[in-house]
Image (cartoon, rainbow, N blue to C red; front, side, top):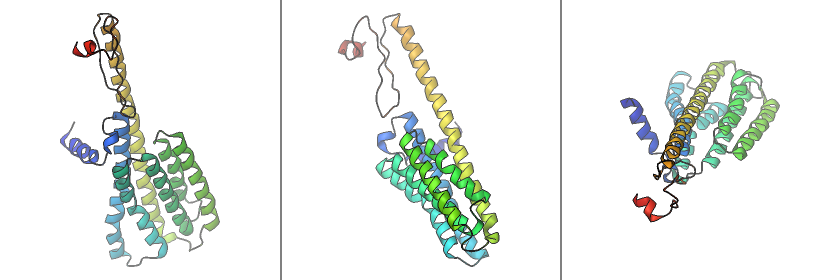
Length: 240
């Protein structure tokens, strides 16, 4: 692990709720979600003064877009405080959909940035590991598409903000791709550890040795033990 990776890992670990810290899969899911919120949030806060210094105008749509870009910071804070990743994922879905609708009002609902953002909503929802969250995210994206089609172009042709719209959509797309990559890599790593633990347990069972291991699933400890007929919760097995 490189020093930079270690520093980033420690920073993101501070945002992980204590109830999820002991579970490798859920803790990784928290870290990737928080990172996915901090990146656009920091981007929004950083670009805002640059926009004002260059464009020197801030319409209603632009103000709403910057507010949406900065709002993920609040979602990350909410998750760190409550540990409710299901609610945080839905809040993120509403934000992405709201940003897509805001852009559609200037660029049209068939523009690439709008469609990209709406496509990212259910993909983000699928990373939560919850079917309910996925369905809620998909429904939010579908509703957003209908609203975007209705309000498309209602505030102008939007030619002036298309480059910014492409940049924002690309940013969120890169963040989502990163989350998918981290989720897949973490899943493979944890699966490998579980397989190694299981293989060790099978080998030890032939020798009459107990094997204890932790497997993250809602902080539940999974104990694989065999000690010549001694039950896993037998004190003798623990002492062995």
